Length: 413
Image (cartoon, rainbow, N blue to C red; front, side, top):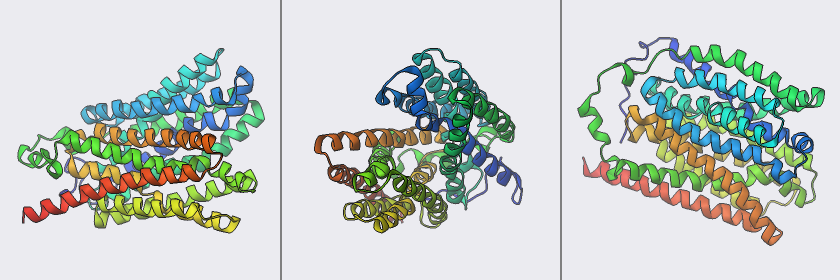
């Protein structure tokens, strides 16, 4: 099933510059609004030291933030489906800075956890992830894949930009001052960018066309929620596989006898190549569709995961890390394209939010499971094999859905 390639009627006339302005505003919101994801990573040691807690307990801010971040994606997606994207973006643009500033004032550990996970995560950063991705898909049709991939690249840009800034601010004035400074930076940038999202997409300003919507009643011959759950299961599978190198590459390099700095360089190379991959995959999905792009990305990701098992010298590890970035960058954007293809626009916000939440769960669970298996075996070999198994699950699910799509196309000819 292919979505009609007509311009969004209620968005802007053909040739209008507004969709491009909205595209760059969305990229900016994604890049700035995901800063709190790195608070628990960069600030782990000083925060743990000040509150007198272990590293394990000190890792909780990141974990709790991710839970709030994921749940907020679904809630804000639902709001955006009914009222447009500017409302959740404005709420998040205020909640995130307030959460960061109040976190800096926390006197107890649980106050810090609550403000970071609830305000910065649940009400803050989540507003500029799934709702923004769903929104940008309304404003582009023939280049929808490229637009979605471009905006999602903001998460990689954030990973490249924010950690060194945070580290500098923490080294200069401590973590509390750093959070306050970043909070005001976010407020100053995000509110004006959110106001640029003032126009509403066509499905919120025009009457629904029941005949056109009827094609979504049995997408791929499945009940809509059955397809939704299948996509979520696929999202968990691919991201459990994806998390293994991303979360453990530094430790893995150290186990092989290389310095942690080398491992950090491999991670940076991986993320940099992910930006390239994300843009290229968007271009590809505009030509072959989101489902085929997801299958291609999953297959390549599995092949590179297997290559990690035999890479044992510095040169090969750098090459495999770069290849992993090039293979997996396009996986997550493909889910948004698939949802927009098989579900009505009026449901895109919460359905994309739910699907992306499953990928967040996969990343969190996969990172923990890889460490657990390492503790059991004293080696990352089983962890990589486990990642391959989950990746294979994803590949088989997507292949199953693609096969159904082909059979239905043949049956309707």
